[in-house]
Image 1: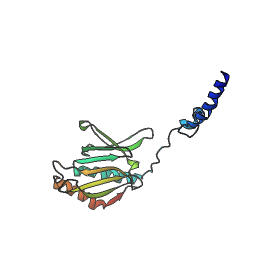
Image 2: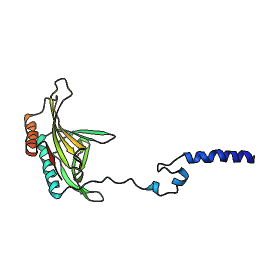
Image 3: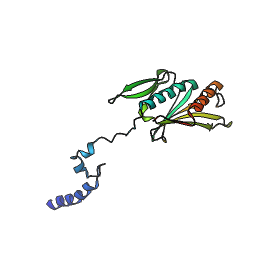
Image 4: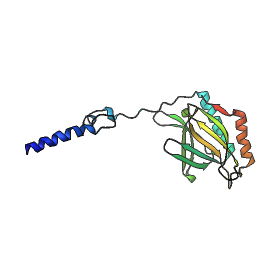
Length: 188
């Protein structure tokens, strides 16, 4: 019986080291290590200046003139879309670091958006082509991250019944913003 017990230990010992914790250590070592319990590093967000924040707030306030938008926020794993306006836009500080956010809260459509001002480095104006057979133009404002490359939110002028059904006043408001700020604007 003793021989069978020793054979089982001889087989099990090498297999135990084959099971690794996410830290790369064998499980029996990882469970005793605090390294595997550390929180993931926080995202490094560049701070924009107070003048940049004021410029960003003014820019966001001007988006009220474009009326209904399709708000699209994406990350590596999901896409969130909502049809809303920026009429209920307000600013507040919150969280442990009391960072300032642009907020749109509209319970009637279950929307609760908080856009970290320090995380927005710029914006870009774009036109596109709708996916409909009529290929109508689309009007877009892309909010950019601090790297000026990653899109953190997109504001598409939303049509009513068909892509060509955007009031001329709303297109004029989008064009006026583009004329004022150019093809892109930096908030740093």
